[in-house]
Structures are given as structure tokens and as C-alpha cells.
Length: 201
Image 1 (tube, rainbow, N blue to C red):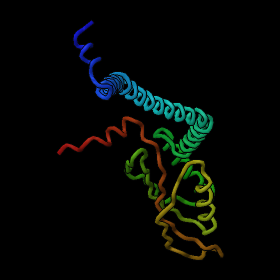
Image 2: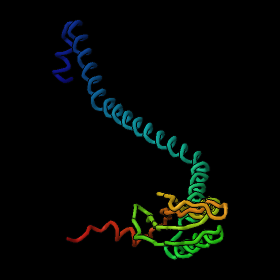
Image 3: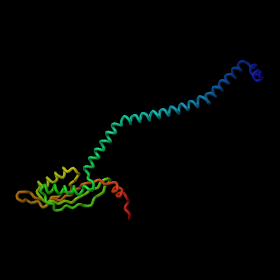
Image 4: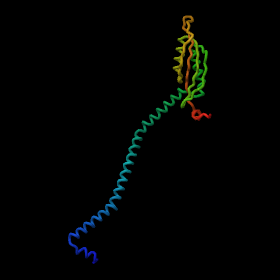
């Protein structure tokens, strides 16, 4: 028999128990350090990864559940854009729009004294197209003209309205009206890019 083992067997019972306890504690510590702790860390990591994946699944499920609503909103925005495009003409339609305005005035019984388009003012994605207008006719004709312009399918704002030369002609109140009619048009992509370029000094 191994001399070391014989030496241990000859020790008093208390010392044998103490050695046994020490061996068990050392084995337990080794098992905790080399087996339990790595497995615990791996478990914690997997648990965190699981929670992350679960959150992603819930987020994607929420998006999937909202997909019909988002599609409906997208289609509504497209319809609104299409409607806006009908109200803002492009550059090719501006001359016909201005012709429509003069036709409405003449049909209302007005005489055009001035119809002078001014320079466009570019904004973010559209340009303002102002026109100085001066007409003469009855109050009734002026009111009909403004109402007809308001009913155009395109946006036309009438501003800076000034009445002058008011007189009674054959029991009809005649007047001269100066105003600024402003319509708008969409800028195409090239125009927007050119507008954003810095001016060279």
C-alpha cells in the first residue's frame, strides 16, 4: 500500500474527517469553477440573446399586424399627392391657365387693361407665378370674375385688390380694379437642384 495512504489511515478520526471535508470542498470548488460558472455564463448569455430575439419577433409581429393600415395610409398619401398635382400645374400648363383667367374675366363682362405676368419666385418644391391684373367693369362683373377664379380646378390666389375710378354709368356702378393673381406650379427635379446651387460671385 502507498506509504502516504497508510500515513493518512493511521491519523486520528477527527483529522481523517477534516481531510475528507477538505477534499470534498476542493472538488466542489473545482466543479463550480470549471463546470458551473461557464455553464451559468453561457445560460445568461443565451437568456439575453433569447430576450433580444423575442423582442425582435414582437416588433416584427407588430409591424406585420400594422401592414394593412400602413398600406392604406400610403395609398391615401398617393391619392392626396395626385390631387395636389391636379391643383398645381406644371410649366407647360401655365399659359393655358393664364388664358383661362382672361377668358373668365371677359365672360364676366370685364375689360382687361393690364395682364402682366411677373417673374416666378421659386420655393422648396414649387414656384409662385404672379400676374399683375387691371380690369374695368361693373361691381357685379368683378364679383363674378373673382367667384369664377375661385372655382378653377387650379389654385389661384387674388391679393392686393384695389378699387379706383368708381363712377355711375347708366345706373350701373363701374370701377377699375387692380389686383395680383398668384398661381403656383411644381418645380421638376432639375429646377430644384439648380435652385439649391450656390450663386457664384
